[in-house]
Length: 296
Image (tube, rainbow, N blue to C red; front, top):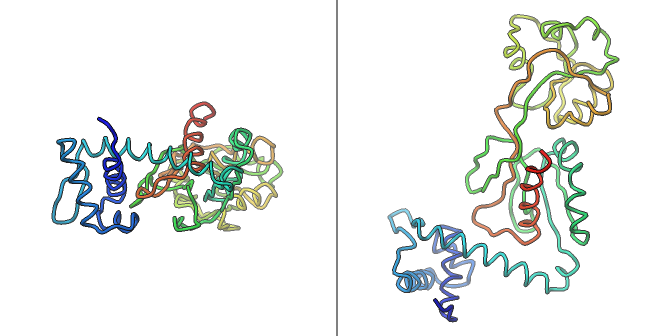
C-alpha cells in the first residue's frame, strides 16, 4: 500500500492515540482536536478494512490488529526521531541520557558494566541520578529508571533485569566472628540493617532460627552504607547478592553460614508506557537488556 501524505498524517494520529490509549491526550500532543484524531483513525481503519480500536464507555483500547500496527508505527517513529535528532547540532554531539536508580545498585552493578556502553557512545552525555524515592518521569526528568520492586507499576513498561537474594556478611576482623559456626550464632553478633522490605527477622526465620534476641547496633537508609559499616567492623549485615559483590571481591567482607534467601522484589528497567523513548534511551535500553544476556 502506497504511503500517501494523508495516510502518513493518519498514521501519526493513530500512533499517538495508541500510546496514550486516549484520543483527547493524543489531540493535546498533536495540537489537534479530539474529533480530528478520531477522524484520522477512522480514515485509517477504512483504508485498512480493520478495526484498530475498540470503543467503549470508558474510552478506547487497541484490538489485536491495532496492537500490531501500533508496535510497528512506534518503532518507525522512534527511528525517524533518532535520525532527525542526530541532524540537530546538539544531538550531533551525542545527545543526553538521564538515568535514575538507587545508589547501591549504581555503585555495585551498573557502573562496573557501564564502560561497555560508554566506549561505544563516546559523545553521549549521561546523567545518573541516585534517589531512594520513586522516579517521576516529567519534562527534563529521567528517561529511564532502574528500580528494585515488584515489577509492575501503573503507567510504566517494566523489563526484568536480574533477580536478587539475601545472605549475611561481616568483616573477617569482626570481634566474635570465630565463634560463628551456624546461623543461630549470628544472633549473638551486633547487627546492621537497612530499609529493605526483607530484614534479619525474615532471614533468621528462613534459616530455621526462632526466639533468639537480636542486637541491632546500626540502621542505615542505604545498603551501601550498611555494607561499608560492616566492612569497618561495626557488625554483621544482611547483604543483597547483586550489591555486595565488590566488598566480597576485595575481601572486605566474608559470607557467614546460612541459607541464601531469594528476595521478594527484584530489579527492573522501567519507563513511561505513554511516551516514546528518545533515541539515546532506546539505545541504552536495548544495550542493557542484551548486555545482561552476555554478562549475567
